Image 1 (spheres, protein in one colour):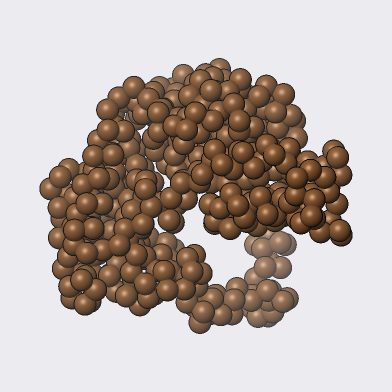
Image 2: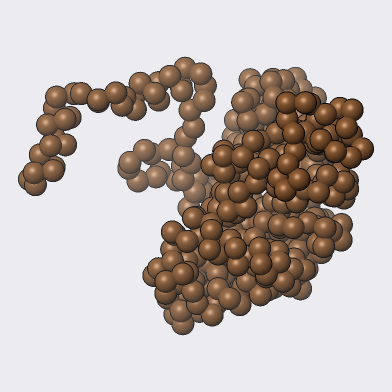
Length: 425
Ligand SMILES: Cc1ncc(COP(=O)(O)O)c(C=O)c1O
C-alpha cells in the first residue's frame, strides 16, 4: 500500500469525516424528498430497456419501454448517417481532441461545424464548447456584465454563469417584458423612466447590462417573447443573450431566433448539440469580435479539452439532417397528435412547443401517474417542487420524430388508464 493509500485507509478506520459527512447530507436530502436516482438505459432511442439504479453494480435491465422523456427530439442519436459521421470523425481526426482548442485541439472539423452553426444562426462566427453548461458559464463570465437581467425560470447553467460572473443579477418575471422594463427602469438614471428610478442605484453611462433568457423553457414548453425583450433591451442599451438549447435545429433550421427573424437584434445566441442534434457539446454564435473575445476570456473554453471529434462529426451531420430532411415535420406531426390526444382525454397540456408538460397539480398525483404509466411501458418523468412551483407538479412528455403512431397511441392509452385509476379524468 502506498503512503497515500495508507492515509486514506487510516482516515476511514478512524471514522473521522473532518466535517464532511456525505451520508448525513444524503439522508438530509432524502428527508426533504430531494434525493435523485440514476436510471441506466441500454440505448438512446424511442424504445429502450431501463434498470433501477444499481449504485456501483451492473444494471439489471427490464422490459423495453417507450421513452417520452428524452431531449433527443429528432430521434437522431442512433440514426445511421449520424453514427457514420461520428465513426468517420473518430477515424480521420481522432477519438478525443487531445488538448484545449488553444493548444493542439483545434481541428478542421471543429472549424467546419462552427461555420455550419454560424450559417444556421445567421452570425459572423460560432464557437464550440465541451457542453452547453460550459458555454453558458464561460460566456456569461467572459462578458463580465455589470448587471444581468435574468428570467426567473432560466436554466441552472445560466444561473451559475450569473453567480460566477459576480454581476448584480436582477430576476424578472417569467417571459414578462413589462417586468423586465420595470426592473431596468428602477436602475436607470436617465431617459424616459426617470421618475421610477431608485436613487441608490445609479446606472453609469458605460455600465454593461445583459438580458439573458432561454428561448424554449424546458419545464413549461413555452417560448420567450424575444421581439418584445429586444425592444426593452434596446430602449435601455442592454445586450441580449438567448439560450436555444431546446430549440436548436427545430425551427427554420436554427432556433426561435431564426423563426422570429431576430438574429441581428440578439448579440449572443447560445445552444447545445446535446438535444435535437443528438450529440454532446455547446456553442455560442455572434459577431467576430464577440467570439474572439470569448476564445480568449471564457475559462471553460480556455482550460478545457476541445470537444471530442466524434461528437463534432455527429452534430454536424445531425444539423445537416435537421436543416434539410423531413425529421422536423415528423416531430411536429407527432407533437400535434399527442397534444390533441392528451387534451381530448381531459388533461391540461401547457406550452406551445415539442415539450408537452401535462399539468397534474399535487406532487403525489404526479408521482403516482408517472409510476402507473411506467407500469404501462411509458417513461415520462414527474416534475415536482422545487423544480416547479407547489401545486403545479406535472409529467413532462417529450415525443420524438421517430415515434410511430402506434407508439403515440400506447402513450395515450397509458395516460388514460393511469388518469382514470387516479381519479384525475
Ligand atoms: C436551457 C438549457 N441550457 C443549457 C443546458 C446545458 O446543456 P448541456 O446539457 O449541453 O450541458 C441545458 C441542458 O441541460 C438546458 O436545458
